[in-house]
Length: 153
Image 1 (cartoon, helix red, strand yellow):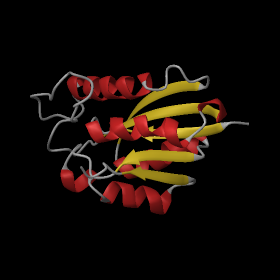
Image 2: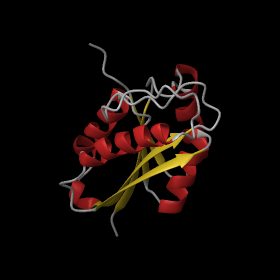
Image 3: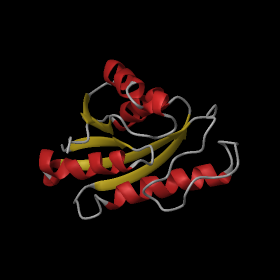
């Protein structure tokens, strides 16, 4: 039985770089499934940040508006593309709720062996996704968590 990996993205370049770091850390032949997850916060005061999907930010302040979902779907599609040549199955999911709780729940549902996420990204808000989400996921995850940090230049 192969490894199952959840890759969390908040639409930031850092989260894309975290996904791109995986081939150096895992043997892709051993990976049975990659689930790329984005989480929309129903209480967000700013739109889902899509630095990687090319859709830009929505003007509407309603996080349930279709443009927010489209931006999140665009971001998960870009990250999922990083694994398109891998032999295992690649799925995407856009969830709504608390980022940490939804990432953990996605990992539980997928029976994941590893969660990969960026630290210090500039997603929903700096305070929401900077370190608190990663910390909460680490404390609640049913599996190992890889928190990727941008190398200092």
